[in-house]
Structure formats: structure tokens, C-alpha cells
Image (cartoon, rainbow, N blue to C red):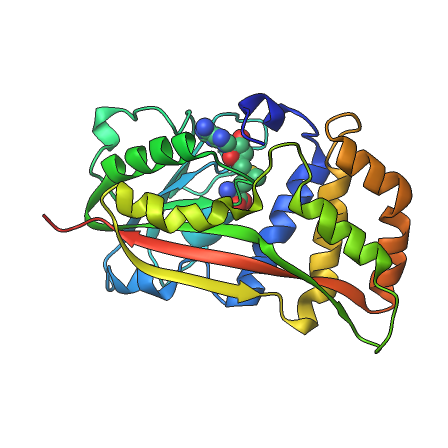
Length: 272
Ligand SMILES: C[S@@+](CC[C@H](N)C(=O)[O-])C[C@H]1O[C@@H](n2cnc3c(N)ncnc32)[C@H](O)[C@@H]1O
């Protein structure tokens, strides 16, 4: 889903619920919002953070609330549709509408300790290069980019009961690998190399799987994500919903699931 126009579709409370739920899911899975390598680079100093593609601002608000970080967060998104009202933001969070592939005002350049990207669905190479180029411009020397994505290259079925039928979940896994024409699930493997290309030193490339105790939550996220795609946008998703969605939901309750992967990449801007 590389075209910005695609982000205009399906934007309702299902989209925001999905993203807010995904945030708490990832936080429970890892136990953190900022990777320990990101915070370690800065010791106990207050952090100035840029959150790129902030959407509902759930990550920005959580990080800003974390008393151990003492963070000030600027969130950027091409649309303010999901921004909370400014009057409800804490004083250490500011939200801006800005296309993150384009230059930022000079007053912001070289001012950030951390630049955060998360859950962009798919980013083609030229857009990733532009996003990272802008991130590097925003960072202070020694600052870090943290990028977190859903890794759909490693989806596989799992059953709580040996021999359970996996036909529906197999269909979902096949569909998730190509939900849209020209979707390339392997794009997440390009994040590390693109960071190096942008002049960052990659200090972390962690991969995690959903743990068994969280499989039902991940299933709910899959179902919410599919509900969030409006009819007509993807033939593969429309066909899947028609034929398999109810079966997947029923099978999930009986202990049939997919195991999903996630990737965390942290890159540091050299000191000189
Ligand atoms: C799937 S949401 C992820 C939200 C958030 N990063 C999170 O993890 O909670 C992707 C967000 O990126 C924004 N986005 C995509 N391309 C963008 C661009 N070029 N400039 C600014 N925002 C962009 C979309 O509008 C959307 O709100």
C-alpha cells in the first residue's frame, strides 16, 4: 500500500482501534516502547523524539507518559484525521501535519535524539530512502532511528490440539503474503540495508514471534485489520473474507492460529 491515497480509505474507529490495540500488543510482547539499545545510547538525559507517521499518537503519548524517559515528542503525519484534540495533549507532545518524505523546517533539523517509525504496511525502496534521509537530518549526532514492522515473511500455522484442521488459517497466511497486487512481504528485510545506505550504523536487528499466550490477541488484530479494508480495494482480501473469514474466527477460538513475526531495527547516526 505505497500510494498515500490508500491511507484515505477505511479511516474510521476500526482503524484507530486496530492501531491502538497493536500498540499495547507490541508493548506486552516486548515489555518496552523504546528498544533498550535506543535508550542505552542516551543514558539518563531527557529525550527529544520525532514519531513519524504518528496516526492516533498512541506510541507518542505512551512514551511521553513514561517518567523514566523524560521525553518530549513531536509527532508527524500526512493527515491529522486521527490526532487527539490539541487541548487533550500533554504539554510534552506536539502533533504536526507533514509529509515525512519531504524536508522538515530548519528549526527542527539536528534537534532529535530518537526518530521512530512503526507499522507502515509497505514502503517501496525510494520512499524508504527519502524517509530515512529526513530522519538523519532530524537527528543529533549519536541519535538513533528505531523502526518496527510486522514481518509477514515468517507466518506459519500453529494448533493447540494436534491434528486440527488448518485449511482456513493456511488460506489466511497465503492471502497475507500477497494481500494487494505487487505487495512484497520481504520489504521489511530492506530496512537495515537502507539505514546503512542513509549513513546510519545498524546496532540492532531483532526478530520476535508472537508468544503462545498472545496468539488470540494477534488473531483479533488480523480480523480487525481485514475489517479495516473496504470492499473493492483488494480482490484477494474480498475473496478471503467471503470464503474464509468466519472459519478463521471460529478456528481461532478452537486453538488454530498463525504465528506472526516482528522486526525491530535500530540505527545510530555517527558522532562525527
Ligand atoms: C499504519 S499507520 C501507523 C501508525 C503509528 N506509526 C503506530 O505505529 O501507531 C501509518 C501512518 O503513517 C502515515 N503516513 C504514511 N505515509 C506518510 C508520509 N509520507 N508522511 C507522513 N505520514 C505518513 C499514515 O497517514 C498513517 O497514519
